[in-house]
Amino acid sequence: MDIRKIIKEELDDFDWIRQHSFHLDLMGQNPKEINSLYEVKKILFNPAVMTSNQKFKNVAYYLEDMDYMPRNLIFNEQLSYIEITKHPLGKFGRRIGGDLLLENGEYFVGTSVGDDELIKMSEEEGSFWYEEFMKFKLK
Image (cartoon, one colour):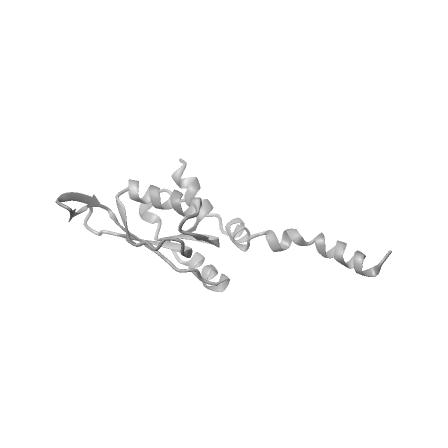
């Protein structure tokens, strides 16, 4: 048997390591549960997603249903996080085209960041991974 073929087969056995996302290990080491949307300051995505991706849409539609309006929204951009800002005194009204919109806050679509920055963000209070947020949303 050719030595190159053996080495290739051994390397192929480790493909799962490259496919396994580090945030799943972080979630396992520090499990978090969301009890209220008011706890959530950032929602993290690993790997980064496009604004056209269904994962982003799942979060954005939910936030908008809860009266959180987008502060910035650029289509077909990659993002690693969404940052949520709450209005401290409850609902504020804003007029757009004569209609009064009530809102609880805003969400900011962050840029794509590297793994180290994403790990730092995950350690901040109020930062949750997409999977943790979806468990809360589906309650």
